[in-house]
Image (cartoon, rainbow, N blue to C red; front, side):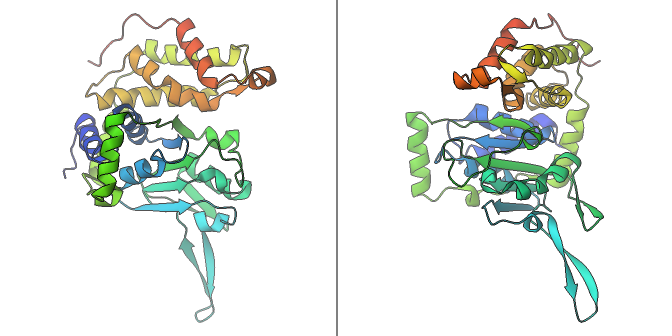
Length: 320
């Protein structure tokens, strides 16, 4: 592993590794790794059995870095996540015992099974990459990625994620059912015990840091930024939306588009990059009106209409 891998090559290394286990979902893998290279957190939401936790673990296993899995349950405490101060009677001192959040990659499995009090323990660290315990602030490792999974159909014993926490996820993606051939490969892989634990790291922390730094330098023309802001503003004006995406959504859209371009080996973004990431970046940031919710209108339809109604720039200026 090298510390000077370009983002496009780093993406291909990790994507090829993931696809040894995640079959038939190259678009899902690309979006998930876009979140990684954009320094954003990822929420994977889908019905049981489609590989949400498997995808999260495969990403963690592909990076030669620290990672923890936190299984969210109703009895999980905030201190289990952030850490606690423990008093040692022998030397009469307090010592900090870090919680599961202190890792480069944190898999928050079934995140909506944690109570609101426990979920709130993630708000500071996901936004600011630091944890405050007993008035002392400690930074988490760099890079830092939270991958949350949740089941949207089983409501018993779950707590809806508040909007403030949803907004901290750069992207929300769904995996979807595999096609026939991919499902056959999944079954054969399980028979041969090919899973996340069989993967070896293909990129180390210095290489990942350098790739992320290179992503930040990907050129974004002012016209592209303006287009992203117009898309986000249009969500606020849509008749089916009570609260649209905030300026954080505009920032997330540009960051994701920049990383998406970098995974393609490009040093500049295009309107198509914005369009490709608009759905996973915006859909979980919309709060529909009561009438839209009663009619069971999906937020994704709003994003589709906003994309169709907002003119894209005719050209972008590559970085010189």
